[in-house]
Amino acid sequence: MTNAEILRIAMEQHAIDANCRPEDFLRDDNIVVISKPHKDARRYLNLPFFCDLISYGKNIVASVDERVYEFVKNYINTGNTSSRFETPGIHELTNEFAKYGAIPMFMAEYWLPDVDILKPLDCSYEMRLLERENFKKYYNMPEWNNALSKNRPHLDTLAFGAYDNGKLIGLAACSADCDAMWQIGIDVLPGYRRQGVAAALTSRLAVEILARGKVPFYCCAWSNLSSVRNAIKSGFRPAWVEHTAISRKAETPVLEKRFAKKNNEDDFWDTLDKLVADSKIIIDRPKDTPHPKYPDSIYPLDYGYLENTTSPDGSGIDIWKGSAGDYIDAIICTVDLKKKDSEIKILIGCTEEEKQLIIPKYESMKGLLIRRV
Image 1 (cartoon, rainbow, N blue to C red):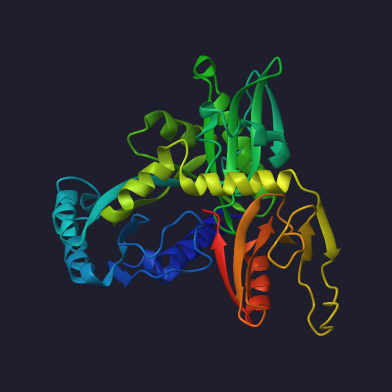
Image 2 (cartoon, rainbow, N blue to C red; image 1 turned 60 degrees about the vertical axis):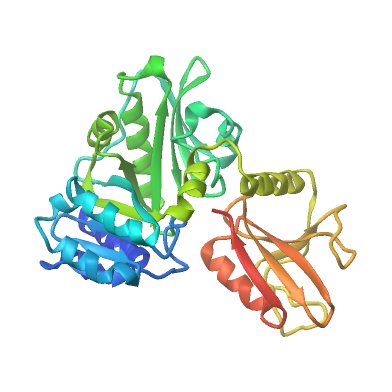
């Protein structure tokens, strides 16, 4: 994969996220579009945006709520590109957005690998490539909360760990935030920093991600100089900056979700994780086999149930098993007026493409897909 191909993939994904065209990021003039949800957007985004400003260095693309379309258009066309991401300009957004109960919230710089310089770096500690099963025990340890996402463990895909006599002292992990791009996070224990551990783990993980046909990307606040230095040393270069405003109604839940130890949604998914972990999965209708009563209906994925559990129809709780591991990705809640019942279906390790194969199965009844975010 070349640098040009990597940049093209990033812009294509960003166009999905922002509801624009990839070529909009390369225009000389600034662009404003109305934000809309998209099933293929980065999975941690809360769409539609109230206001999201994006720049790859040449112009600004703003994806906004239609109520602030004209204001944001005037704002980004006043002054140069960089000034629109800084104070005092940001204060103009704060004052205007307050009228709509919104506030500027997140600012970050995003990095892509430079394949001409990226290489697996060394450090003085043993390093191991880790799959999901190898790092799932670290989710409850706060020292690894940059590398791993406790709120979205089903997205964490790969990791590299550094060990000192068997003790984990550094961890770089990546989350499959969308189908084409995996985001890297890094943590190193305090006593082992400034020894090249972070760069060794980050670079090796980036090389592995590229080998698997995905684009690694890296995010940090521009004030986090240690993270910036690590990105540069690891073979990454700045690609774009992004500034996101959110509704004040969402402010508290968003911050609680990012920083609190627990919330009700976490409790729900944690309890569902435990239910599945404590149950035996029985696949009684394998992928590509016909429905026992309706032979024209073919199961697109493995379908089964959790043994020794109970659903409203008296059988076990139904599950769909995909190809992306053992994490619960989503549930489908169904309401069947003919049977006068309601059930849930648990989706385990289902990619976005696999979810889209499942959803049509519930058109005759009413089904609602609830993704784990």
